[in-house]
Image 1 (cartoon, rainbow, N blue to C red):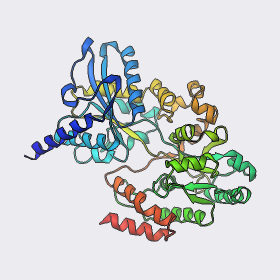
Image 2 (tube, one colour; image 1 turned 180 degrees about the vertical axis):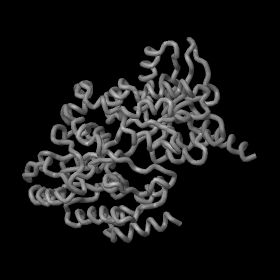
Image 3 (cartoon, rainbow, N blue to C red; image 1 turned 90 degrees about the vertical axis):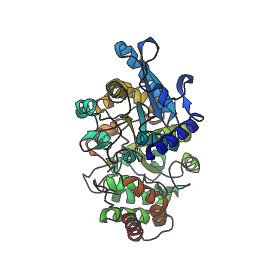
Image 4 (cartoon, rainbow, N blue to C red; image 1 turned 30 degrees about the vertical axis):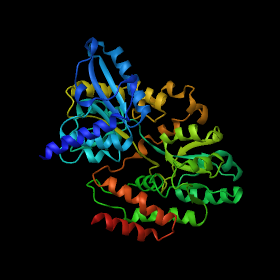
Length: 438
């Protein structure tokens, strides 16, 4: 009876989502009918779900490349883009009910732990991942693993960096290369405020991309590896106290709109509203698309460390692409996924098509990454010099079943209380941690 109810729910969600799905090549996802089927010309049909249309276009292009390179294993990729929540809900129901899942699917990092609960209904990818571990940033597959088994592969490293407005720093006589620690950043910030009347940096109060990298770069996190809440440990308290101090002294402000993806924030920064922003490398696309007036004015540098010689980056955000256990062609799907996410050519294409910092480190020095495109035109040709500099300092975060809940608490309550309402950082972190431990 329980399974029957699940099947009905899955069917309802599938039907409702078909109306909103955005498909490639005029094709729309029909999960049950097509999964594992044979296509015309001897091609094997593989279904791919994503919530990002750019990811869909990328995978379609890689399917074409795969067929040219592997005519004996040709595939017909039926790729579909669905709304973020709809896709994740539909995928979860399909996997739980045992029917209706695609062969391959994107799963956003904060959602991934939901798919690793109990016995994962995703296919193990060790046969394609392990041979490439020496060539990639390992933490970007570790975050999608459980009990030594890999279940997802990311598009990017998501290395946290800091983007400085060089014009504003020049007015204050500040050399960005002289800022190596957060203490030095604070002193430089005072000079920028005095010279420009504008803040040195913005902090998010409704998203975690300011606070989380600053704790993770020194080995802390919001949970430990086992999923126990660590939100109120001493390192995290010290970081939030530092952030609040900068806000109180007007060296920092809360990002207009609350976070670094708000429309009002883009307008604020486009008018040189603040001298820097710390975000992952994948944020470059927000500058090129939404802040055109800063073109040629920004430099990308490693984040300051908390101590001399300390780590200066952490991998943040991400989307793991997985093969589902329901696929009738799991081996072929895994081979294609590895081709599309782990190969050298794929990682070059990930930069060219998506503007992401690819996880295969050898391509960071490839000439293709210096070729003219909207990113090199905006930031210059040496974008990946900073990646090479911090290659061994890009720490991981803990991805586990408790992580999404703690992340939500940070976004909805904790950071806003500390950075907007100016409540005591130690108090709000402890209150949130106690609530999460119940």
